Image (tube, rainbow, N blue to C red; front, side, top):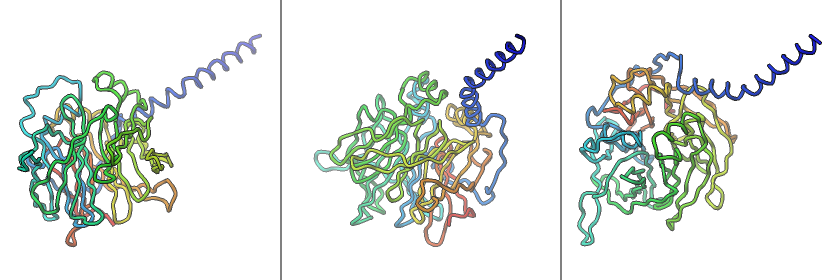
Amino acid sequence: MAVFNHTKVIMALALAVAALSPLIMQAKTSLEIIGFGRTYYNVNTTSCRQIGHGVLQGCEDIIVDPHTGLAYLACGNLLARQRWLTPGDAYDVSREVEMDRVYVMREDDTYNEIRLLEETAEGTLILFSQSLRLHGFDIFWDPADPQHMTFMFVNHQPGHAAVSIFTYVRDADYMVHVETVATDLLHSPNNILAMSQRAFYATNDIKFDHHIMRTLSTNMRLAHGSVVYRNDTGSFSVAVAGIRYPNGIARHKDRIYVASCSDPSVHIYRANADNSLELQGRTIFPDSIPDNLFVDPQNGQIYATTFLKSRETHKLFHNPSLETSRIAGTRILRLTQRNDAPSFVIETLLIDSGELMPTATIAAVQRRNQIQRMLIGCVMCNFVVSCSEISVD
């Protein structure tokens, strides 16, 4: 009888462990994601320097023209960016003292602003009159004439999110508004992938607008995110759903890559005939969170900018100053596809413990006039970073 009771106890314990195992694994994963108990040291940062202080602030995303090597940056006021980074929080509208800006940067660190204009009914060009709160963006180059470019910006306008589309001719000092589109399906856009002069994919990072629900959804790692598609006629559809906080999106040839924050990984998709996305595989990051993705057009390698300590990153987003958190940190990864397989060889190119910049959101390769370097942007920094001695071959 005693043996029988002992056996029952062992079986009950085994069942309890089995039942709790998924929760234990999820808790372990969550601790890894927030960087709990981890210390990081700088790797490959000695050739990096800060540029554009006080002007190139809040540059969340960077796109490099593969034809010219010119880099385009979507930047904005740090205090104003808190509104769409932490929606639902108490917010003082007076912080929005100026409109966000777009810059073009050359390899010698010189840069200039590209003014955003719109055309009146009489044909006169005036400053863009709508609200402009820039997040991710992308560029479509006209295949027949790459000098003609279409810029698509995620624009967090008051009361709704939108995508604002502009046309631009290379070397001009302005671009002209074409249209701003909004739909219920585009409820929480983060980043965008331009497919034509009108069509695009966009990531919806989360389902909810309310701060408490967003926090719960993120902390519980719920699969409430999606990617939506807009076709050339202006119709929207859900391309894929059930992603844990999709963030950056990029493309190389017939493959589309989506970064998942709450399930730290890069998902690999192929587009179907109806423009829905079919999952081909994914690459998991065990201890860092991917933000934006940059695909090197020269070789198809993916540069993933990742957060090391998400809790410290969250602090930074609430109070954008270097003093808020110098330990959030950044890891920049390079993903090289294994032949035609939907998997990658992953290299760590750079680790910054927070000394160079609090945290980064994009790393882009710039090649121009024999200069090769990496440009690093940060949504809550008042500068960008240039690294000259990191291998980008």
